Amino acid sequence: MKNELVQNFKMHLEEDGKSMKTVESYVGDTSAFVVFLESKGVDFNGEMKRFYITSYRNHLIENQYKLSTINKKVNSIQSFCKTSNGYYKEGL
Image (cartoon, rainbow, N blue to C red; front, side):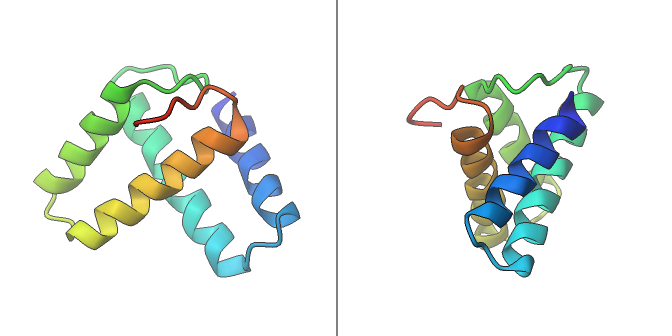
């Protein structure tokens, strides 16, 4: 399921005319997020919860990512949520 979600997101980005660099970046960020959730025992099915984003952001902070990088990754994930699964809720 997770690979299907990420692949659908990739197709959406390509169909939307995003550059290859943007597609690679967004897909990489999203894939890393899904892997993180799996490492925490979450069987991610596309339904986003605020806790997932908060936990991932804290993980990135603990691993000393720069704020700009964290923001980029969170933006990629929010784009994934908006376009890929219909479960996006404002205010993530």
